[in-house]
Length: 282
Image 1 (cartoon, helix red, strand yellow):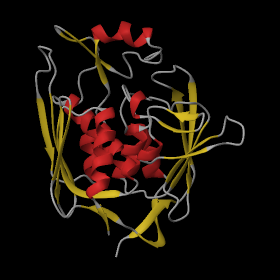
Image 2 (tube, rainbow, N blue to C red):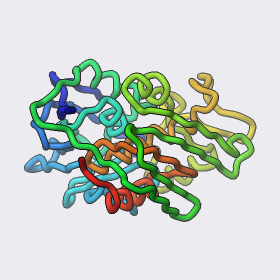
Image 3 (cartoon, helix red, strand yellow):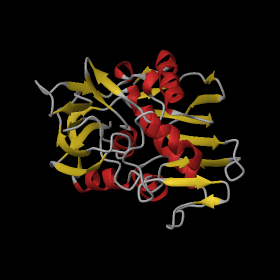
Image 4 (spheres, rainbow, N blue to C red):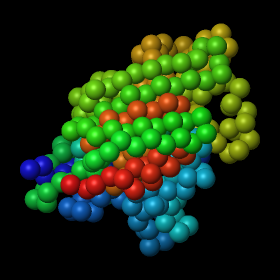
């Protein structure tokens, strides 16, 4: 029987938020069994807690990242943290944050996954439960399509495509998402955008902390960054990274084969809502 987990010791990371451009510090702390993943806004009065579950998401604001809230307390762009926590198998964690957005670091999940791995995942006494499916499900939201099939582990098959000459289509299937696969194949993939989006992002008070060190910028003739891509299919790998994080908003680890075509944060959240209607906790 699997046991619930947390981390052995407190660890931290800091840097600038991708969209707010503000300095931010994250402190990861051990948590008790059945607490789940909880963000704490330590910079606000009474230090409000926000549990990272789908009912606390603001799907309407999940355009360039996933957002959770409790009253006026909000945390933006949590997907890289959530993906790291999920892939490392951490069930319970306190995440103290002194700003509205975690640091973007290098645009990937390596920084978060690395410090959490150093904190050492440890078992608690309580039994761990998984979300499972008895029957396949299929849903569509606009151009995004999602399928989930019964499976004895967690795997993802993803396809992305854009109306852009350099990114017409990328596809990748990961037969099993676990710590080792995540650290090697998924966590290093960096966030990306198209160069024509930058002006619009800034006009909407987004992307203020973005630069060539923490985001891949795609132009018509190639990428603008001097640093080479980490993977030839880095863009679909980053979309898988985001999806892993968004799926963990289900509140428990998932055992299913998830197949997606053109995923995005808002639709990922809607998919989690549909998944929870059919999934069984065992």
